[in-house]
Length: 479
Image 1 (cartoon, rainbow, N blue to C red):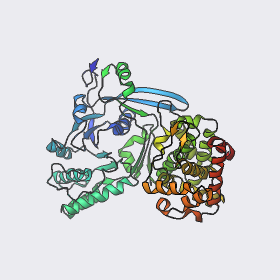
Image 2: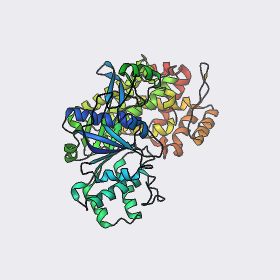
Image 3: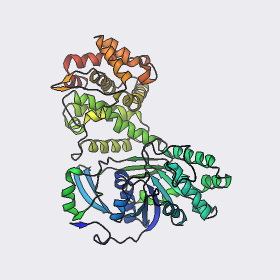
Image 4: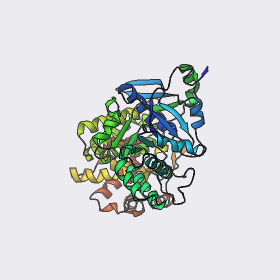
């Protein structure tokens, strides 16, 4: 089996370095670099990526050994058909470890063709650390490193307004662009980099919020040997992802013209606001996850796929997603239905085992952000409570009661204060007490939900129904 490099793979590096990417992990390689690879194939973009290792230990050395090459295994359901493809991604030209090669890192700012910066440094990566110094080689924080690079570019090109950079953060934070921009401003002020540089950043550069969506399990340990046989290469950076992908970028048309990924037949959207798409994802993907998990688990099911394919629980999932949560969103109905259909395909992906117990961690806080807004909006629009969502809340409260599922111990996991509250409520042995107590807990909700008309009565009814009939029969009753 051959080592993977551009000679053995016959993949010359003939693209132009236009993109700096902070992060070399599985997600960026399976999502962003794949999108750039596809864009190069379908348009005249002809861009390559220079990868920056954002922390002092990482994969840049391995990436350079393979001269930027790796294989991506995409698996999932596309328009009802199973897909299991393996493709060699060749858009990464090289990697740089700024902790070891800081001058090489800064020299990127001197390349006139460099135009884009893309990052995914985890949710904790976009943070202002006042301990960082401009003289550090490099600054520890990602925004600090970025300011060092921007300032060197500003000086190199003497403030040329045509040499600014377009920055796409992909960290999983709502309005990530606004957070990153504020961090940059804080460093400019902390390091006294001057008004001229500040104005160059504000007017020549753009920091645009994005939403990313693709499940990336990463290195496929279980199938790595088979994939290596399939490709013929000893690839140490094999990556795996679902076939579904979505990248929403809050930026004007002129940015889309420069970064033509939306013209390559990909699910890349340039929009005036990412907010409705963020709301759509949280509502139609995360929202059903939160309620199907306790319903499915207490019905004897273990994975999201099993829940969706079950005759009873599958109908419950459809009710919550299509009849209730979809009715609370403001995007066009056909667009919402297409997204919901894609979500269902992802839920039944035969290649991904998504255990419901992993989703049930911190279920009450998840319900607050993902499903409670749907209850309120549905009531406001329809004049009645959404039965499926309220039943899902009853299922969560029942799951937090503990006990056993067959031979298995039920072990809920949440904030200790929430756990203590539920234990105390259930010990009273009264469904009304549980319903009122759960809804009244302002530590969970930030408000008293007993004030929502009819909610206390319906929750009490569902708790009693589950206790009397068992979960699966109770689900069938509300359907």
